[in-house]
Length: 355
Image: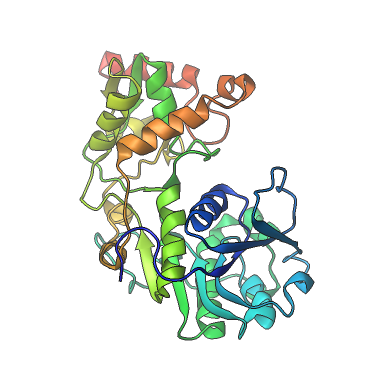
């Protein structure tokens, strides 16, 4: 088993999805390794087609897999599935015609985040919805994200059933890096780069993340090596704190920025939401004690490589600075991160020493 780079012969590789955040990096890495790449999706994001890639069009939500009928592939990576029906319906066409299947799942399948260092054997979320889960669509999940983890867990079960003995389940945590439009992690490099005093959460709380390119590249390596079973994908390899992460971001983005730490009590008193208002941060106590302390030993032992945070920060900023001015000026644009006015308000209260 190799621990880095490409392994084995060239593959006929099918990627379900392939044009989004993870997929673009998978395609680049697979092509660099000499693989023949086919993408199957709705064709709505193929504005700049890549030479040497075969594009097949279908609609998984509508059950349209006609373009895949009669095709055989050495390996398939399924990026896009939110509901178990998609796994089952794709398998009706692909099962028996795919040598290895990799399902991109999530750490959200786990029923609890309370236990530090929990591994892939931890209990998963049980589906408790009213509707038959095999009738649900991605739109149903987006309308009720409480279903997300349980439906991903059912999708894992369906993948194992449909591809017995040649299926890998990859469970990433927070995926970060160039191309991430959510501002979940991007908030920090961009905010620090802008300078001044930056409100930050407790420095000693634990944190984990994974660069999108590490997920993408290792998913291809999993297919090359025909690995099976479940793997948590998070980094870095050693325990890390929010303070460590933020100090590294400062060193890369703007050493002159001033980090002003607020206690959990202060943040709770002012309704500052972990993960949302101060992205990435999840308190390392109680029900979330293990959220950023999940074991990744199995994936590391199997060859997962994690690039340094300095590279992720630098490349994220470089990508960000190529975005249109309108997007940069709208920062933070989504639900993640504090507005400048709200941050200044909180910093003002913090300076008084009051909760």
